[in-house]
Length: 266
Image 1 (spheres, rainbow, N blue to C red):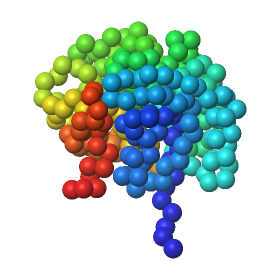
Image 2 (image 1 turned 180 degrees about the vertical axis):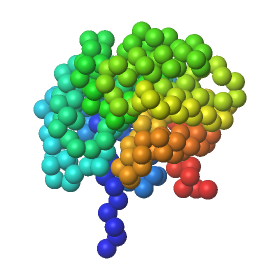
Image 3 (image 1 turned 90 degrees about the horizontal axis):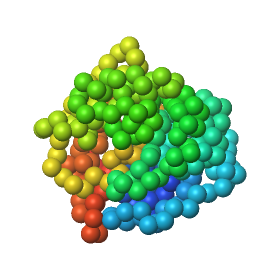
């Protein structure tokens, strides 16, 4: 009998192309030694060129999936991704508030191709209901602007962005600076308003980066489920994602995915 691995639950949308969403989450979780479970919030028709359709699940379906997993199997960490609408955001926030496990909130707003994945009417629910449940929130720069109005144009602006997100209640925020023109380095800022951790990694010249945000948030959740402190979990997650980006591959005619299994093939 083998020892049961830590349990991580992703609450997110499906990516039919397999590069992002729950598909990316479950791949990352397997690669990082935890047992991944899923609550599907929406189905997308998606490939390397973009999102061609989105169908949200009913609130009762999301609630039933969550309760079925948590009440029977249990969970050591939860990661949220695409929640699509205000009713789904509020449903998930209520479920998280009653769950005694760390939560990583990836406030997904748009896809890698620029397709909207969160209704504008849901932004206030994300700010007021979802972010306060987060142990770590992981917005990219576009999502920071969408949520707070702060525009990050240089590294020094990331501290202002972090303060604006922390005002909504997450314990920690990871501002992902991958879209900043910072030369050879990709720079992120992790802070709880007191501690600051600047995380730097080589910037790889690879356009195949679909699923980067989902993968990073899932990797952080995997680290938290294994008992790591937030800074250590984020540091390990960034190293894993940096390797996955370096190994990203072409798929279809557009933007290919990161390689979730890169470390298993070394």
